[in-house]
Length: 294
Length: 189
Image (tube, each protein chain N blue to C red):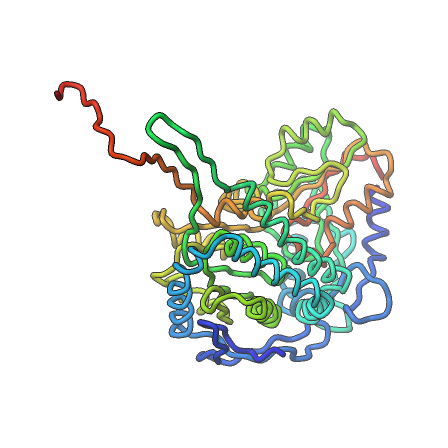
């Protein structure tokens, strides 16, 4: 049951700025009604994330893992509901959103493996005692989700950030608030302590309030080149803020000396038009030999 | 190949998620997004691109547009991402020119080569500038077991997916001893 609220410090609360809705692009049906988070809501979310950070960071890795794995099990259990909700909110076809929901469930194990593989601990004895390499979480991460993969892409920031011991303020795209709320409700159900993940709904002003916040330690962003540039400029010189910006592409596909013209054409169609061209890795430019390959 | 491509683009089935028939494309995320794609197509045509298959709004709703194919050979178009179903075709006289075209972008997310020739793949892999470089596979369809991101304007070289672990934690180096050793300091007794 989605209520259109924000999730702050373990409480579901109404947003205090203007109301907004999310609609099914295929038929205009309203599928979610809520309100934008204002600066005070965003402030409360960051303060909650900051307050929750020390305990979450100190929670033994195995205990964090257990909660993340419970979340993964819930995603797998509700994957059909999740896929349908993504379809209703984005217009994406069901085979596409079923793939997205499956990728979200699959992400859990892969992210935990990646955490062990890419970070981990190393210790060696030395003449004076020992040398040790360990990893620490950064603090409060602001996750900005896109609309094209409203579940899978923010999930790809949230799961690794939580595994490492960070706390989170999550703002889904204003086009996909329902999927954002659905995900956060699964985190709540998985037993995540209050304040570890906070949800603020909204568009540009909500995002700006978050980017202005003093308790921000990092911005994990997947979205447009324009917005990514604005974020990068805003934090120029602020080396203490972690930025992970995944932006677009103007991606080439070269077809050259391929005998099977039909298979090549299908490869180009798939690459350019999957998800109605709304993937950042879609081919945008097809390069062919002059004159040949009619 | 262009004939096969044109045929497929014209025939590409479009539906809503709860329609009965199989389809490859749904609507865009909003009517506004659809209007943006059509406006971008108009601008490309105005800049000299030749429409092979025109992307058009469908009667069933303002977020529905059909797939579009344009010939942009020889044009110097803005290096913008159009986030929708438009594909531009460029012709190159030789593989050197094709590589130049492929890399003629400030972005660097994905790049693909479709070819039977392994030596072309070797060249493509070496000379392409992107974080996802595929051979005889689609450009999308990234694996969670791989990094996702690329150089240039595609991001800030903090790839996501498998490498997200890197930007979620920072490494801390420690040297430790159980007792305080009295260090030898040159010149001090």
